[in-house]
View 1 (cartoon, rainbow, N blue to C red):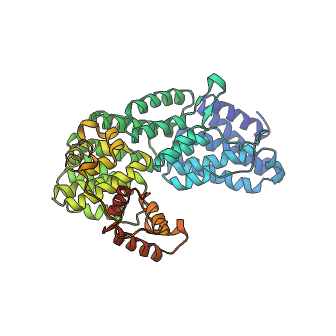
View 2 (cartoon, rainbow, N blue to C red):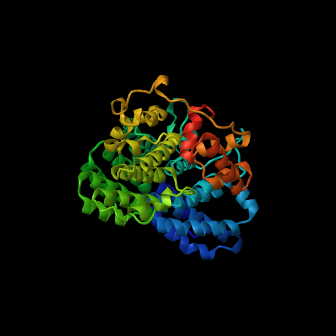
View 3 (cartoon, rainbow, N blue to C red):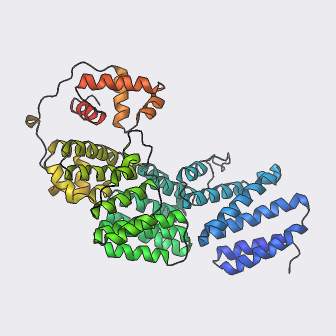
Length: 470
């Protein structure tokens, strides 16, 4: 029996590294009982060490409530430990920051998680490169992927490697992030291969919440392949290990609802959608389930926040809302509205190559696009990957197109506005980018519409591309 907490903390860390959870908990409890005996100048450091080990253990077990409590305790103790002592152990601050970010990630606070993971701590190795906690770059890649920033996620995985030389490989968070990217791009074979690698990595270093995310991706892949019953089974398996954080459980409910919708069980689909919470993605899922069940009365209200011109929603949720709005508009013989929504959806999908959402709508998208060769031509590469060449009309030849005239040349500032609009920035975002007022942007847009003989921004962008202005 040791008289001080330090040996117990070392024993707890070693037990945790070896996967002996009960031994680690017992050692931590023993250390806790001795912390009050330490002099004031050592107590804060002891409590900080205890909180860091508890944070790591709680995250590995998937106990988000305990992890959040440990992260809060660690943050408070960091402020109490003398700076000269922290300077000798900068890895502690990085570990606490990474733990706080991981808690934010699995709580669904993705922007907060990204901000914490991107924080620079001013600590570098002997070559001047910024140090990272193992898994930090991979977790940031996963956060960015879940935010719909797929290209950024792919770039970040280049930093998320373990080992050296020929033994170098991606860590588990990076593998899960890349699998999610490939799923969203409808590259299902690549997603399956990465999930197998992630499963092996998680076998060596278990992480319940990361494993649940892998199940989530696997269920989405099964649904994309038309295996709805398999997707429901994977969701059930993901929940079999005990309670999950609310946000993660809601993400499973979203996939489950879509699987039941595909299987034709609309009652189960609606029940799962109701369990998915009130996020934008959950609202779209509920709207999809109600549309499939033939109950379209409440859909405009559900979709309205996502279809607003100034919507700040992540790309995947807005894309799915626009696709549903387009499908319902075409079905109601409002082809003009349907085309506007579909064109906006395709432009969002182009930015990150979000082919999965398009592939899931191939049943109605194919016939619509075959009647609209011009729209199909504008996004042919993406649509070919998502739907297949046989679903699309033949390319439009130059002789088939009517000449496009411009009433008056656009000014340099108007062209700049048009470029930002083509990147799916809303009016406020364009104003921020150009350091001008919102009213000035609106004035530029009115001039653009007049000069290109158009009536709205999507049509203006399409006309500008035809004229090769952008």
